[in-house]
Amino acid sequence: MKLLRTLAVSTLTLLSLAACKSVPSYTADYEKAKKEITGIMLDDQQAQKIGQNFVAAFNTMGTENFVKNASQLYADQLFINDTLSQFSNKQDLIKHFEGMNEHVSNVSVTLISATHKQDSAYIHWHMVYDFKMFGRTKTMSSYGISQIKINEQKLIIFQQDFWDPANGLYRSLPYVGSGYSLTLPFKK
Image 1: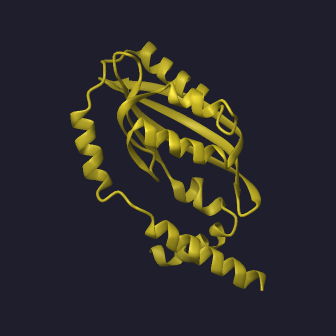
Image 2: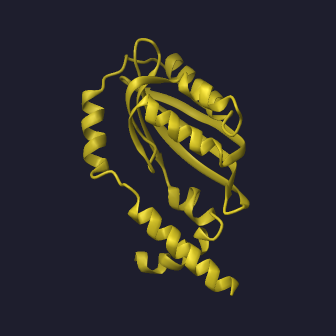
């Protein structure tokens, strides 16, 4: 019975993930935004500061301060793609953060490095957190890089996250991870 329940929940979850509103062309949207959105030119010190501010805000995820702290990082109009979702305004992004905040706790984000090229900072990070789903809590861990551009007010106007949700999220989710593992042989 437990196996049947796990298979049913996993199948429904995978179908839900596949049926979610997807970005029609992530690559085209990214390329267009990268060309059209210009941030200020950066130096090493500014890239490091962007990384420190980013990590400081996301280290409060799962607390009542997170939404306020994160919202102070972003401009009203922006491009952000976190691999699972895409946003073009701060209002929708904040709603997304509010939803995320309800499902995570014990967050630890570490800044591994911060580099830059022209107007883009590349923030290499490691995130560990507890994720609550289906009444269970699981510790997750993922590495990623965020490409970030800021405006004159030092607010984020462009963010593209590069991370692997298959390893960083899907395989670790209660019930979903089992279903996802069953689909891996078909990936080849």
